[in-house]
Amino acid sequence: MFNGIFTALATPFLPDGKIDFSALENLLSAQLAAHIDGVVLLGTTAETPTLSADEKKQILDFCVPRLAGKCKIIIGTGANNTQVAVENTRAVAPYNPDAVLVVTPYYNKPNPAGLIAHYQAVAEVGLPIILYHIPGRTGLKLPDNVLADLLANVPQIVGIKESDYDASHVMQTAVSYTENLDYLCGNDDLFPQYLAINASGIISAAANVFAPAFVQIYQLFQAGKTKESFALFAQLYPFIKACYAETNPTCIKYMLAKLGFGSATVRLPLGEISAAHKEHLDTLFQTANPSWLIK
Image 1 (cartoon, rainbow, N blue to C red):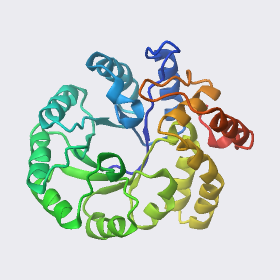
Image 2: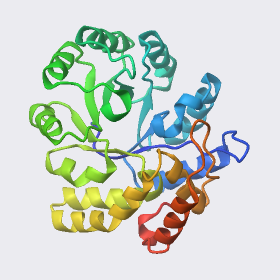
Image 3: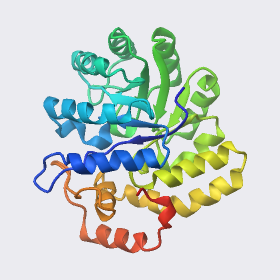
Image 4: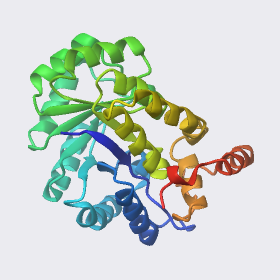
């Protein structure tokens, strides 16, 4: 169901910090023109911790009609307060998303019983769930046996966005579950490895800028041209690494600004990237193949 390239959409801001809806419209159009398969709205890359409830609604009211029927729509609704996650999920239900993206609760590190109950509560809203596993940000790593119990008890989980760098865990999950649910790469820098272990696609922050390249990498792989797919990824790799030189989405928004998609403004507690990283990105961009970039 969730196959291909899904862009974790950034939120363009005006220099004064307000949402730049003109830039957002251009970004949506550019993503669709790149033939992405879906968009994640209100994910971490959208800077959702700094968006008000009203701003989130404005973004959904603006984006969903422009995307509906043209690509799949996933909406982030996770929180480390179960009631808030449930309320977030209920609030987006009228938009009829193809799924909601629900991160494992961060900071409070729920035990297995609490974790299962958390996802069961969200599942009662009635929307398909993509579980977001990113232990580097949440502080919660799912052992294989806990993941098995979670999936057995919450059948509404139809996919996993995996952002763990533990190769053993990633492989075990792929071997155990890719025949029954969609396994989505959450680490742009590991995309070829995920494709090789039967992942269905990727939820990518770097695709905000490099959607055409990601689409081509995926299509080449699906066509059996694995060497050509990896060769393109290898060319793109320095740019992917540069996207994460500082906390996402600071570098991505700097690159989007260079392409004319709004300003580089991020909201505190994120700050402007360093002069050294700006210089590196400026230099790197001079070598970018224009066909890799959104237009």
